[in-house]
Amino acid sequence: MTVNPRYGGRIADAWATLHEGIALATGTGNRLRLIDSVDECAFLCATAGRWAEAVTLWSAYAARLREIGVADVQQDAPARLDFQRSAAQALGPDRMSEAEDRGAAMGLDTVVDFALLLTGTDRQATKAPSGLGGLSARERELVTLVAQGQTDAQIDGQLYISVSTVRSHLDRIRDKTSCRRRAELTRLALQESLV
View (cartoon, rainbow, N blue to C red):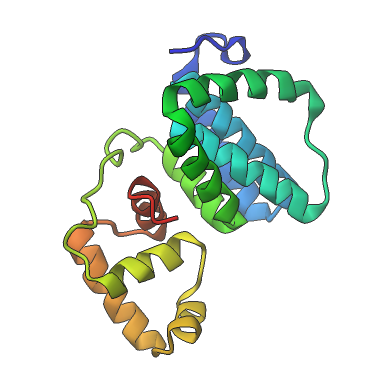
């Protein structure tokens, strides 16, 4: 595990504190605070050696900053760059690129759900949900759209099916994967490289 003086050796406390902060920022709708929380979650993941998750989060962080027209915090850039170099060595070019693409494709709601899942107290228990092997091509497509932050109504418009059909598909997907929340489906889609 890479040592990061930022947390003073208290990683477990940092996960819990960040989770609470993200939940509060979600309640207030403070977009900039949410984006900053994504950056902090990426630092925690990097500190824990969770390279793909860190790179995904940093890519989403950069994309969301560009989206709202805010510059990156330069004081954190050197540490972020050091971690990204370590991530590139650990992941290799293909996996690094995949993680970057996943993050760039995530909307703010999706990446915040992902960060909440990563920082939650059940992060170890949800680390490996059931795979997507038993899902049909259409069900995999729905999981991808959920992971991209699409609502049921947006999915029905994109796939030309009714909202009730979307919900029926999602119920079957939840039964097959044991993922009950959209955030869990998002994490599964990320693990299976669907987004």
